[in-house]
Length: 256
Image (tube, rainbow, N blue to C red; front, side, top):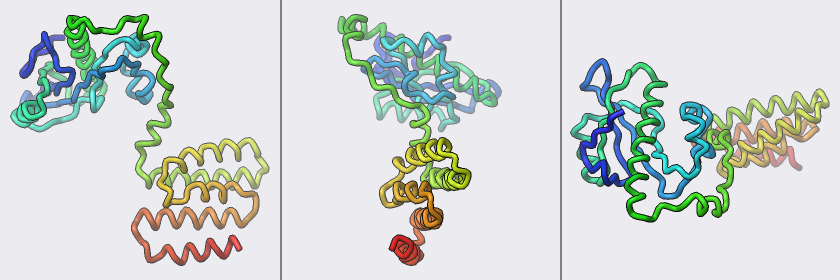
């Protein structure tokens, strides 16, 4: 691959660049991503969701000492016209690099080109950085405390809109009540664990922990309370505040 610098210097990359590619079927259509080289060595495998990590060669993911460029977003997306990107690069002091052409209808190709081009840019930066005489040695890297592993599924859950989190909680309420009715302790505990993950990611105002406690309570009162907590959360989400006092009264009456 030949990366052409439209702005900046390939011999001294800044470590952050706008990468552009033209549609193979229409050169007027521009796709782009933003490439960032992290200043601290890291392994992308610890942070990328499985969908993105699958597009990167395993040896690259395992190399924690490699200053690999990170494409943000991870797929080339249709962009503004070139003049706008040139203006952005100028005002942000970014490198601007032409990485060739891409099949606009092939999402996998757009993802792979973003990844490989970012890796190439990262290698250019690493080569330049090495000339400064400050690149950490492998021994120094190994002496550093390992970064905490991040659950890829947790990252995906964090990006969910609140409405989707509440919808998932609603499904799990049904599963919990089914487990209670069937005296399936293992299923109930697993369902409770999943519910708690969603509840932790919601703002306190939704009272997610109370919802989980009610849904996993073994009495009939728990089922009714869970339904009320879920209804209250949706009212908050939809900003239907006038309906909330009545729901809260019903919750208090069940708890008395």
